[in-house]
Length: 482
Image 1 (cartoon, rainbow, N blue to C red):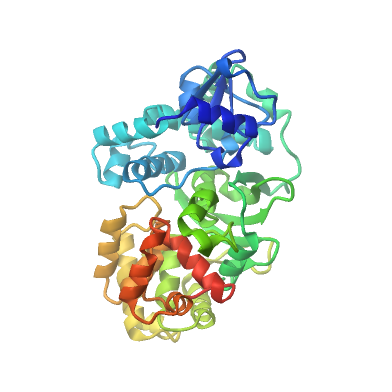
Image 2 (spheres, rainbow, N blue to C red; image 1 turned 135 degrees about the vertical axis):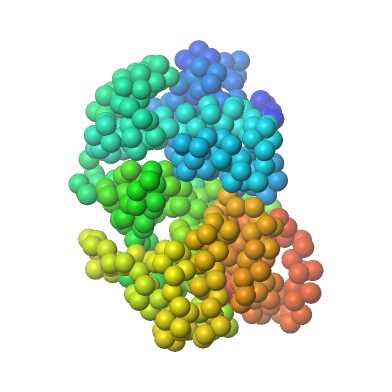
């Protein structure tokens, strides 16, 4: 990634939030690196070095600022093929989904060679994947030391270290301070059974818009939404174990960030938990970049986001259930589906009682059992076929999946048409250029009844057509289409 020092220094002096997370500034006189929005007095230009990632700054011998906390910087969304590949690899490394198998497994998951992945990764982040992964483990540990009261042993293992000794030694070596120095600053505001975090975004952020969208689609027992918060149950298979719990997301009162509470039962699965919250709330979006592409369409709601997926299978089930019926009717069916096949979960919230069923559970069902819930038999068969594809590993519905290959596999599932495939790509795959051009709401907002003309009209919005869909739905009413 090429960084223009003159532009970076101007953004630093202006504390321009649009550049937060896009580069980091290291100060040679202090050997500390910061986010461009750091509130300290800007250093002299000759003392500044600019890096495309926190890992690159640390590889050059700098340690993170304790004030602006580089671990809190927002991520980046991209449609460029090389950048998207590198970002997908970074996401997998942050999730620690392939800690044991190594880079070859990450490359295989993304459908490229390890050599090509190293080259793309270095071009995007300025460091090798192994250095990036080590920095992410340290930054997560730093965040947990600062923001939680978890024991140091729990922090070491939750961050991906195999021993407390190795964690302590590397922390002192890299950051030149004892972990206990941050431990004294730990926040005590969270409830004893919950861990509190803040996830940054680039403003503006239309919280009411995303809450309305998710609220219209809540699955009874699994999710609840009000004007102030989004809550849901969650399960993760991580580190060879299943972890169950709940999360709560709300806008921060003072910062451009979302406040996130995570049940303590999910402490050992924090990397994928936080990654899924970021995807669900579309925190990597750059509103200014989207706004330039969409023009007048985005002016009324410049902070509108594309809600992602906390669980790709869950969103796909919801999309299939919603075929050719209203949002409210699909919501009713999704609630029945979760109640019939999900697992019970104890939570502090009366509205959260159920874990959405895993694909493996649905893959074993005869479709007639699903049809008894009031689901048409053809859609029941589609749900079972989809679940089997996911349970076998033939299909993957995550933001890191190959877009074209995944779309082809989705279209091959009997009962999955272009609208369903594009909607799943828009949310579960986090593809910013997904465009369900046959959607009734999209056609109504454009005052067009020919899908070909809809596609032609949307060419001007590439590569951010998924955001155009959200704005078109918004122009009709909050909550949108299916």
